[in-house]
Every structure is written in C-alpha cells, then in structure tokens.
Length: 153
Image 1: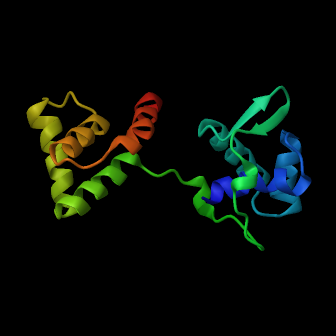
Image 2: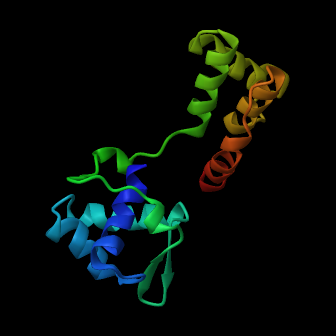
C-alpha cells in the first residue's frame, strides 16, 4: 500500500524511530518534493485517523513495522494516497461480483431494503451488510471501515 510506504520512507531514510511533525513535512514536501506542504499535513492527519501513526508529545511514531514495508527504488507516491475507499461501494461491488448481478441491480436492491423494508430508517452501511448476509458474501473485513464511516457522518 502506498500510504504505508509514504509514511515509512522518512523513518527508514533517517533511521529514526520517531520524527517531529516538521521533519516529516520537510521530508515529504521539500526534500522529496512528493507533495505540497498542505498535502503533507493532510497525509499526516489521514495516517493518524487510519491508525498508522501516533503523536507522542511533539514526536510522531509509526504504529506499524516500517522494516516490513517494501519501498521500491525510485518510489514516488501517487495522488491515490489522498483518496479513501468507500466501504459501501466495495461491498456492493463484492456482492455484484459473487452473485453475478449487475451493480445497478445490487444498488436497487439496497435502496429497496432501506425504503421498503425499513421505511427509510436504515443507513446504507447497515443495508449493505444485510445484503451481504442475505447472499452469504463475506463482509467482516469491511466492518471497521463501515463503522468508522457511520461515526463520521
């Protein structure tokens, strides 16, 4: 995953277990020129939200094994590191793929579940889990992302 490599790179390059926020931003934006200063700040916010880093006083510490992350020679993160995958859409795609139904049919059934079975009193995150259960499609790996999405709404 490129976000892991992007966060691991400053620690590996400097051979430090902890870095100050300004050291991280300097590495990402000025030293490597991978992104702007604003984007580097956004990346750190996302990494913290995703549980990849923790602030230890004024220092940043990774919450994953940076030695286990492969950073290819000439690595440069893509703009995709700023995008979050939508867990509802991931599960819709999975249901469609495993049942052989087209995505629009799965979305229509999702909407019917919300509006006809629950009178509109069901969140899409819950409805997609119900559909996954109905079709015996594995969904457990998306639960934490779905719960986080509900908490943010």
